[in-house]
Image 1 (cartoon, helix red, strand yellow):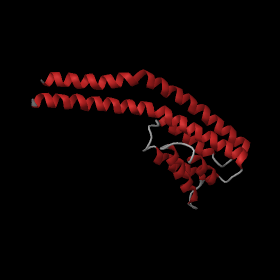
Image 2: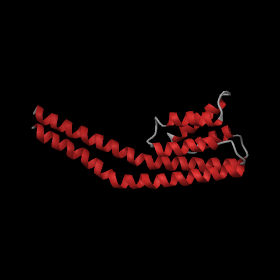
Image 3: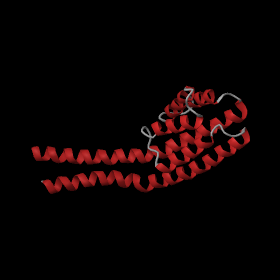
Image 4: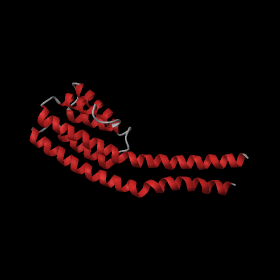
Amino acid sequence: MIKLLGALLIVFSTTWVGWDIAKRLVARPKQIRDIRAALQILEAEIMYGHMPLREAVLKLAKQIPDPISSGFTLFADNLNEESQTVTSAWRKSIEEMRKWTELEEKELEILFQFGETLGKHDRDTQQKQIQLTLTHLEREELMALDKQSKYDKMVKSLGFFSGLLIAILLL
């Protein structure tokens, strides 16, 4: 009876790990999509809203879901600190957002590069920089969706069957 309970616990645990990994695979493209939406809103605010960057960022943070909205709220808070430049505030907020998201190094590097240009150009050049960033993020989103479609079911099944194998070997 105890062996059976242990075997069920092993199968449950490995299945849960598989589902957790699959959940991360699903979250990554959505988070990239949310960042793209945020940058499109920021572009509209820069081009047509004529409001200060901090206010535009706070406004867009209310329109997108967590955890991405929390990263933009943190960016707005970092902009409030007088010792921070726009670039350093952006970098600091992206570094913090890295902990809450499933973004990979490629997406983070794209965002860091965007932060280097943020607030340093006129509106037209800034719009071009946003469009370039959106293009790069779109490519990463497509790659993330491809990875999700390839590995989602496999990871779930692998979690279950590896637990089943371990349980059988131990019994």
